[in-house]
Image 1 (spheres, each protein chain N blue to C red):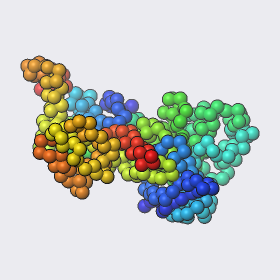
Image 2 (image 1 turned 90 degrees about the vertical axis):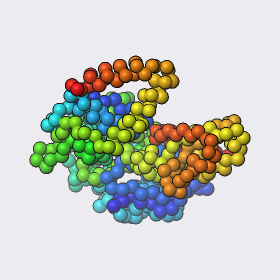
Image 3 (image 1 turned 90 degrees about the horizontal axis):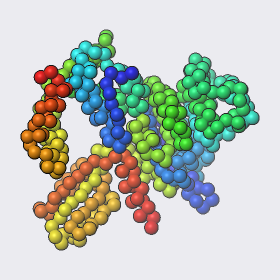
Image 4 (image 1 turned 135 degrees about the vertical axis):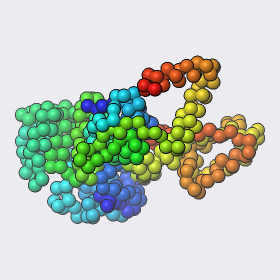
Length: 300
Length: 127
């Protein structure tokens, strides 16, 4: 079952399309990372899914419900952590949690207590007087203590110190390991989420350029370097599935995006019988960079 | 705490790194036949890895005969299972090639490679 599905989801601000034609499915039980530079549309996508923003076109379904008609039944199962959340920051942390507690029928008091202790929350201080890191921790407790079925995190770890980050990661993984809970998180840092995610979508200028499981991405991308016979290089026809294609002298290099698919079977023979071919797997970060560079080039 | 040592290198295939670390612990005697093995949840939590990845690690280790999963006791170490033909040829083909390429590149004589192999062989097992 898919917890989140979008079809041709588009959101414009005036003339600018912050999201354009996004088709995305987030299966139940996955930790799904949206990766992209600042301004790629990650936050707009999350806010559209959660009905903070209305789509200009297309549709988003969350927990089987059209995002525009999300009601308490769905929202009571969705935890959301973002710096953009509107919080009455005059409230003290204790009062804030007391307020949130009443909103959720599934609120787990023992878990709230445990997280409050783990994160060392200062219950008698006003939210507005807290550091950024401490604010994020308060938001995490508010989003986790009702054991949401879906957890949506917008840049949850950026700018946090390593220890705090590690505590949050463990807490999030604990929730994920409970039956089939789904986590959707946005980040601009590939390495930050590579370890904990199993699926990713790359975003660039309002578009989702790639969406797949990390396992499948790593399996189908290969770094290819070919030494061809003298004079052969200029005759090689570049394929659409090759990113970052370069030829220098008799050496050709590119990233193959479909290295093991049947449509690419026999690609080696394109370089002639004398070619020496070496291939190497790529890390998620390298795959991400190859696609990001390719979409920059397309824009030019 | 996990009963084996590992340093995960981000960028490499995480599941494979964990599988290797477990096998290494079994071969070196850190993990012995009958020892209880952590649950998927513990593995995910302690290593800060995706629970689905942890699940894949467990499934692969059970399939390869390194772990045995029982409904009553949970998952335990089974000891060293003789490798499948595929595993052996993968090791001899791919892994060995890496050593040989490196050794030839920096000019280590075959004799030194053999000595190093014997030394590590002895360090890791009683054979």
